[in-house]
Length: 246
Image (cartoon, rainbow, N blue to C red; front, side, top):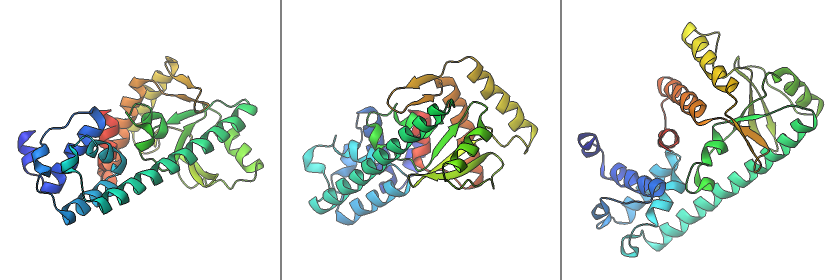
């Protein structure tokens, strides 16, 4: 691991140090920030944004001695970026709560995959970035889609794994299955493993969100498969590694 860390650029090393601080509340290698100048801080914050860890790195930066903090203008810009993440998270959670209420009124149970559910494990859940809502309706996939269409929402059926619609401007993916079971035998076998985890009924109800959240073992298995698929298809960002770590 030391050899791998040493092969990184200075900006990448600094970012990992801050992310570690943001996740675990401990900082090492702070000497790498002693001579950080304006352009380097700009490069670091841009990389953090690209990697989906702007908020986490911000939390780590606050653990640094004040003498090692970035210039004031970068600090302000960074803080504003984190506030924007917090607002998006609040909007997404409100949308989720509203969607959960609609499902509940129609006797549909909802399981939240990834996203804000994983964020609950973070020291600062509101700083874990997420884009869309991934849900599973415990066999009521078609019923859920029909309900959304009856409620005036356009449902996209292009993808084989999930339908997609926008709810309060938030993209929602309603999963018919967890994986693309038509792709290969491995996916079908892994799908069965995930359903076996659901049968154990270790999932819990979140009063905050109004939906069910998967068990720890389900999350570990699902995230591992999801991350590998992303890595092979388009690559992954540091936020996905953080999800797995946390």
